[in-house]
Length: 177
View 1 (cartoon, rainbow, N blue to C red):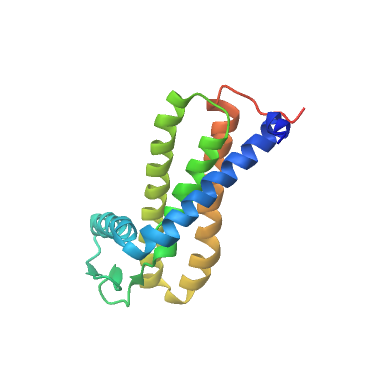
View 2: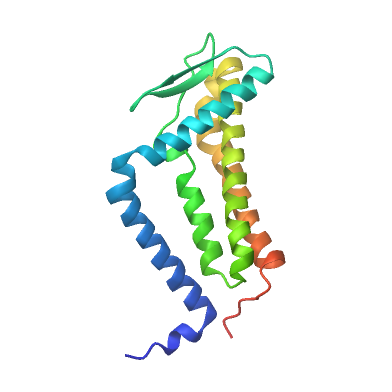
């Protein structure tokens, strides 16, 4: 079998990224998500820091944690239910796979990936905090901001991290020539 097509760095990147994505998808869907501990840990951490951030701004908050009920908010509101798709784990993995698949020094990847994951998690905490304030001030704007505003902002942020890696931090340039 001839694998000479893998000499093209763009093809190699796409194949590597695809391999990581498929492996993660199977691991997450078949083992991690049914187990539930990873999702719960990330959501509980987000709730913890979001509620403390709201309290820092003078709000009185409430939280409710159980296997199926992960809610937090400002007293006097119905709060937010934080589901598994909103915990950021998918973004953590996509970000990591891009960095792993893109050329660059492993030593640099070993600090950039955790730093990127932590920063994405912090952005998600700020998103949850802002959504709680929206529920408190203008609940009719929740759905729009959840669906569009914050989805776009977080996606742009992750894209900028990738761009930072590709243009500034990775010492290798990828070319399909």
